[in-house]
Length: 179
Image 1 (tube, rainbow, N blue to C red):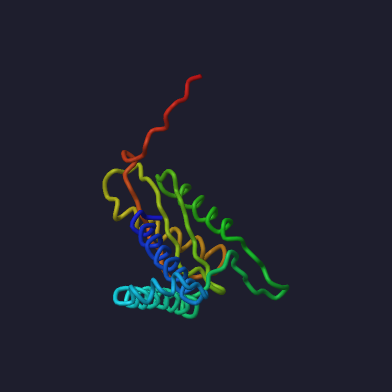
Image 2 (image 1 turned 60 degrees about the horizontal axis):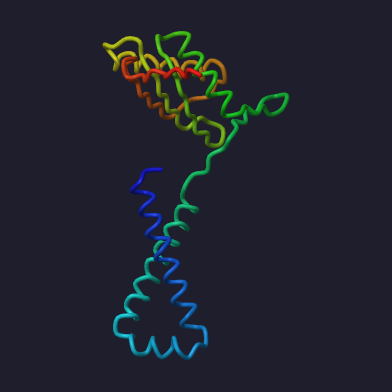
């Protein structure tokens, strides 16, 4: 998770906790806090309303995401004459990665697949190329290889394929441990 995302989540969480604590203290029959609130109502009321609005906005966004975001699966289910065939997400990823390594001069191939219903919706491929030149052309060839492999093995189309190809000079050398 990116640091700015963590910071935003932390800020929203602190605001939600402050709003919850303030509302709980306001509703709890405590004479000291009630007097304090009445004395400081000029600035405290707008702050509490603002925090309540922020909490409502966060929960509204969460509700909209829950309703409108498409769900993904961990397995691809193919219907056949003899029954259903269930293929795990990692099996599909390994098949594509091995096909790319076999046909192209690529190292450290990492494939990430998103599965929706009965299709592979999105595939992200990250690899390092031994060919320092013509990376765009090789990335297109890797994309075609991935599409063809899934089409010929599973008969499943892929909607989106994104290939991130870096030259092999960017590979970090593994450090040796001497004991």
